[in-house]
Structure formats: C-alpha cells, structure tokens
Image (tube, rainbow, N blue to C red):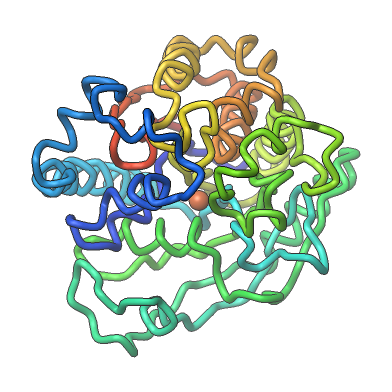
Length: 355
Ligand SMILES: [Fe+2]
C-alpha cells in the first residue's frame, strides 16, 4: 500500500525576480489609465500595505521576505526528503502557458517522461537568485507509469480527467517549474519524479486575460456572468476536493510512496478587482486558513466559485485538491504557517500533513 505525504506551498514567481521588482504588479495596476485618482492616494491604502512598501517601494521588505520564504522552502524540502517519495504529484495552475484557445481541460494528469528544461532561456530577463547562466539546463524526471495509473483510477472512479504524454504549448508551466526550482535552493537537484496535475484555476479569464491581469476598464465586465468577453469557469472548489479525495484513495492503493504537493499562493492582488488590483483579500485568506488549521473541511466544501473570484483566490483551487485528499485520508495539518503580505501580490501558506 502506498504511503502519502501532503505538502502545501507556493510557486512564488517573485522569488525569481530581483527584490526591487517585487511590487511590479501593484505598479502595473497603478499605471493603468483606468485607475481612479483617489485610489492612487496612499492614504486610501491599508496601513499594513503602506508599512510594507516603506519608502523604497518594498525593496527592503522584499529582501527580508526572501529569507523568510527561503527558510520555508528549505523546511518543505526537508519534509519531502525525510519522506523519501517515489514520486511527487503536484497540483498547479496553468496561466495561458500549456493550455490555451485550442483546449483548456478542467483537470489534466501530465503523465510525462523525463524532461530537459532551460528555465532562464525564454524569460524577459535571465536574472535568477542563483546566478545561473541563461542556457542552464536541468532535468526533471517524469513518471509516465504513475501518471497513467492515476488517470486510469480517476476515470474508473467516475472522474473524467484528461491526460497527456507530452506538452502542448509550454514545456512546463511556472506553477510546476518554479516549485521544483525553489525546492532546490541548494542546487543539489530535485530528483523525485514529478507527475504534474494541471487544474484550470484561471477559469473565466484564462484566455480572456491570458492568465494574468485584466485592464481595469474591464473590472465591471468580469462581474457579469453572462458577459461574452470571458471564458467558461474553472472547476468549482467542492469538485476540486472530490478530485483530490479520489487521487488520494487511488495512490493509497498504489505501490508507491507519493508526496502530494499543492503549488500556489492564495488571494492575488491582480485578481482582486474589488481592491482595484492593488492588494489581495487578506481577510478572506485568513478565514480560509483558519478552517485549514482546524481541519474544518466542511467550510472548504461550502466555498463557491463566486467567492473564489470575488477574493482573487483562483489559484487556491490547487489547495482545494490537496485538502480533499487530506480529508479523505482523515488528516489534519501537523504544521501550517500563514505569511501575510499586502504589497507582494499574495499571502503565502505552507502546510504539512505527515504520512
Ligand atoms: Fe500561478
């Protein structure tokens, strides 16, 4: 029988940018021609946001934050290493990377073989925290057999997930690649075979906004569920929990030791239209986090797509999959941490559910 470890972490794209860039999304919103003049006045912003920005647009806070995140990634890596998984199944979002106009599956098991990746080659800037050359190549192991096993089990359980043996538009989306990179801060390699489990977190805006921010002029349109400007929604939170639960049952019957990893931060400022994309919905994240900490899975099941969209919590759908899995296994977190931030796109949660 397979043993299962549960880990929740982030793929924190900011870690792959210099400290002085950590507020670039907030500045992009401020530069939007449709930003109302009164919202540009810092006096209207929450006090903790102003404090984090300081007088250098957050650079000093980012330098401190980077060390906090590094410590948490090191801990996540330690937990995974101690468990010695045969493979990692990672839930991650696709932000108009691999899945675009030609197909957007609600869920897809990417049952790939090993991949050779060049993480810095096609980025706008090759800057990276490890000073690696732009043409650096790394190998990420796949596990086609386990991916097929998981997809087969899901379909047999009545969950019609898609599957793929090779990438479509992008070798590996940031939700997976960033996490592999950040879990390997010491650059000794991340040798665990990876099965990427893609979740359509961006739903109504995945094609419409190419998985990023919408111009503020469309702020009211996105609230109109009949608007033809947008795409069909992502899977609802409750369904994500059912999928996670099924995945846990399937892999618990497998011959492998499996680490389930949910890879994403929580509410995103650039998805929180009610805050004019300037800061995330910290209160909504706190409430959801409290339910995570106490193992109040019913509260997670009650959550709706409307709440997700209103609070910019699109990417938390990855965590709904993980929590569904942990509920099915009767687990509560052995350790969880909420890292509050207002200026740096999104609060971050780390959580561990030991086997
Ligand atoms: Fe993401």
